[in-house]
Amino acid sequence: MELKKNCKYAIVVPSSMGVRITPANRQPVHISDTFRMQATSAETNVISIAAALGEKTKVLTTFVEGSPIAQFIKNDLSRRGIDYEGKEVPQGGPWGYRHQFNIADSGFGLRAPRVQNDRAGEVGRTLNIKDFDLDRIFGEEGVMILHLSGLVAALSHETGVFCLELARAAKKYGTKISFDLNYRASFWKNREDELSAIFREIASVSDILIGNEEDFQLSLGIKGPEAGGKDISSKIESFKGMIMEVKTQYPDVSVFATTLRQVVSANEHLWGAIMLADDKWTVIEPRPIQVMDRIGGGDAFVGGLLYSITRGYEFEKCANFGWACGAFVATLLDDFGLPADEEQIWSIWEGNARVRR
Image (cartoon, rainbow, N blue to C red; front, side, top):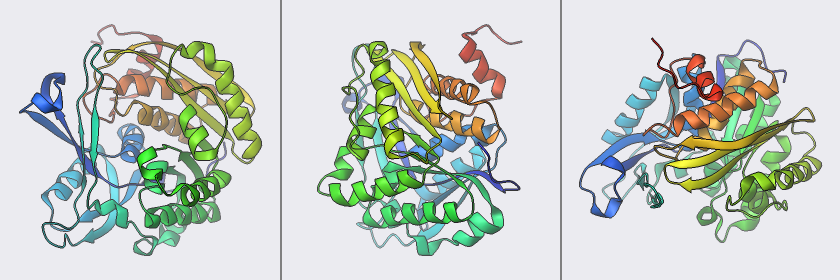
């Protein structure tokens, strides 16, 4: 894939930042009194891989002015090496704006993880194109890949317009567009026509399109295998058929990717991936991985894939690296991964857990 040259940023994402609080020792939320807090968003989970491996990245976001949570998020982004840009929004009193809270346990054994999203008053819903200089970002600074997520596109009417305008500006300046559909039923409720139009337009101008079987079916209306991840290996041909149908409807997309996940227990998953790029298939058969915490694994797959594309790797190598990044993040308590180096990721791909001295 030919990427724009002489860019300040390898990957830029829009995002609504928040925090996740997780009970200690994989305990359920309702009986816990000790929690760990981390800054998080699906989109910054993605770019953390590239940032850790030395690529320049940026998040376009918004903050609650004077909020200690906002400062916590900024400090964490700086720790990860991610640049940030965004408006400071006055809180407007105790019932005004705030950053989203995700409350999630990790699960254990046959007890599945449970996630509650508390998004009342979420400041990220105010993301607006007028608060950003797109000519500077895409023209003067330059961006190789703009990565968009369906989570942000569906967050509010304003954020949907924001993502559309970002995609149009990226196209104008020769930036490649990646779109992870990330369908969420609660976001789409009573907004199906509006969001379907937004998602279809973004998909039509995208160069890289990512989603699972549910995402493609419910966001774009493409028929595919039954959602749920049971006997996943037997459905690979169905996944390939779904991707071919997406390709027919969106012929200008160069790369299509989906992950394959079958849950054995909260501690063990079968993890695989399928990618179609330049009319060539890469199929990574699902294989067992150990899971500390599952949240962020799909984001890490996307992050590893996009990082590899910015490095100019062959597409099969890109898919393999993405798979291994997802397996890497599954071993962590954080939603995102900060690999020490590429070797750490390739060791996971090779199944080599021998100590390095």
